[in-house]
Length: 165
Image: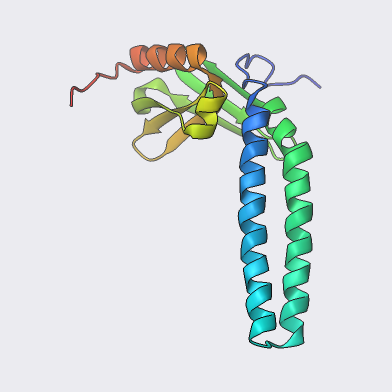
């Protein structure tokens, strides 16, 4: 069977897996701290025993979920993301088991912007945001030169005017 998304040539930066892993570790630490505080409060105030059991189960699920995110999900995300920009459409495809495919007409694009938080900045990556009247779409994990080039290309195709603030 032919892959109908084979023509989508744009890929995310491989170093975006590191960003996703850092995010997973931050999330993991916050979740464990919250469960730890709840366990401490539970023992201090002598809550029912079943609450402690539920908190231990939640802690175990958090550990399993974050192991999945750290070792597998980050790689799957990067390997299963693709995009293509031409004069008529922005095409986005993500997912493997549950594929999500979007075609955004250039005539509907109202703004295009690049974002870079501290973790993305550490790895020299950007997120490209594309806004339409009803929604916003993004392409994460793009190298700086690619993100800026795409931003200018989409703005040109969509005839988006730069507004002075």
